[in-house]
Structures are given as structure tokens and as C-alpha cells.
Length: 167
Image (cartoon, rainbow, N blue to C red):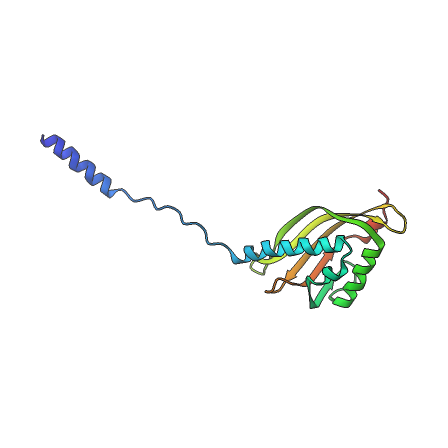
């Protein structure tokens, strides 16, 4: 009987000495990633308005002091009026615009962590309204947002020579 009691006490002691395994806590949601996902939806609506030549709605996604950085050399930090004129030219010069293979990534701050801004890559497919030929444009853009979810600055990279290639 002593052996049974000793065995029982040993088991109880060993069981009580075991470290309790703590369940991992759910990670706290990153507010910048939440902003990023919201801003991706704004970016998609913005690009959809552009695709549909909806210049009125298209402009509603940007701030009054919006800055545009087009890909052309020597043209940087242009005001909203220059951007509006350029976009109207694209809307007039190309029909059936569609961004294909779009990929959205989080913009990164100085600390190399998501900051809510949006980077987007894709291939614009359209038809040149003057020639009737297919046009394609490999495109990359970074869109910077304010706290209200409006676009304050857009930087774009593409090769305009792509628009004149025949497909």
C-alpha cells in the first residue's frame, strides 16, 4: 500500500510541476494593414472610373492639392490640373481600357513597414481610338493616401513607347 501511495504522490507532484502551456494570443490587427486594404478598394474604384472614362468620379478620389509624378523625364510633382489634362487625353485617345493582371502591395514607410499606401502593378490593355489598334502598357504606380482615404500623390512608371507598338 505504501508503494501505491508513494506512486500516487509522485504522479501528483510531477503533474503539478509541469509548466502550463499558454495558448498563443491572437495577433493584434495592424491598423496600417487595415488602412491598406481600405485604400486598395479606393484604388480599384479610382481605376475603374478611369477605365470607364468617368472623369467626374475619377477626380473625386484625389485631394484638391493632389500631386502627380508621371514617368516622363523632367516632369515631376505636377499639379492636379496637369494630371486632369493628361488623363482626359488618355480617356479620349484610348477606349476599352482595362487593367489586367493587377497586383496590389502595401506601401512601405521609412521603417520598411506597411503605412497604408498602395503599390499596384499591371498591364493596361486598350484600343487606340485614332488607329483602332490594340495598345498595351506595362504599368506600375504608387498611390499615397491621407487619413481621410483620399489620394494625395500618385507616382507612375511606364514606357510610353509601349502605346505605339503593334499587337
